[in-house]
Length: 94
Image 1 (cartoon, one colour):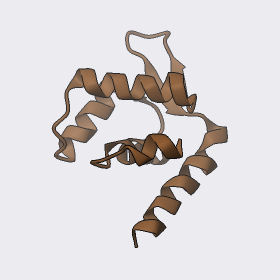
Image 2 (image 1 turned 45 degrees about the vertical axis):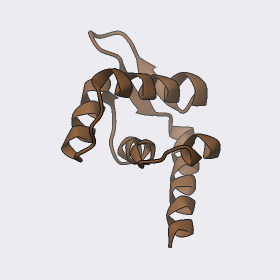
Image 3 (image 1 turned 30 degrees about the vertical axis):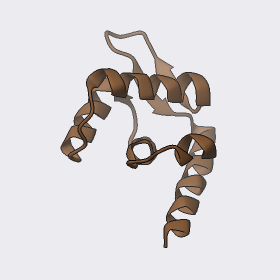
């Protein structure tokens, strides 16, 4: 995950991870709208790929595919790890 975040040039990945830590469950559209609200210029397709990658490659997200849309949440056992990595990144910036 540290390598994944090291390539986060504009901070979007960290913001999305923070969203999953502080929130509950989100669809791709929820994440897309949040990033737009935060003034990031992203496409829905790009957000979908990013969230999908967090799910498949990193394995940190849980997915519910029973409804019309995939609903993602951060797996409980990864919350402390993600919080720690995000906090470490913040402290290294200061």
